[in-house]
Amino acid sequence: MADVKLSIGEDQMKGLVAAAIADALTPEKKEELIRGAIRNLLETKSASYGNRSELQSAFDEAVRWQCRKAVESLIQDDPEITKQLSAMIAESAQRVFTTNREKCIEKMAASLEQGLRLRDY
Image (cartoon, rainbow, N blue to C red):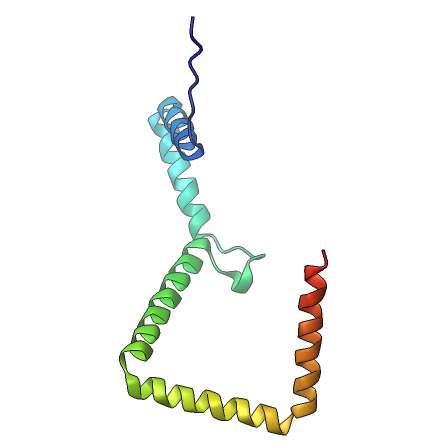
């Protein structure tokens, strides 16, 4: 008789386990579980950065992502802004290279040395 091998991916297994647990719960326990999950999402975590709830943190991240997309689009689509930013970056680099030349060289050398050390392992 031939052996039959069954392969279930991790995501599929999680789905099957979640379905099995959900099917085993009474309607009252399901409601209690859902309320607890929602309460957990809304609860402020004192150990988290800025004492934010998971829901607040997710919302904040979504807003930051949308802002990054908007700014990226603005920069890519407006050649004048791209030109001004390039000029400002060049001026800033020039100022760093001339004003703090020795300090800049020291930091670049330390960074290069650190990068080379990591390759030795």
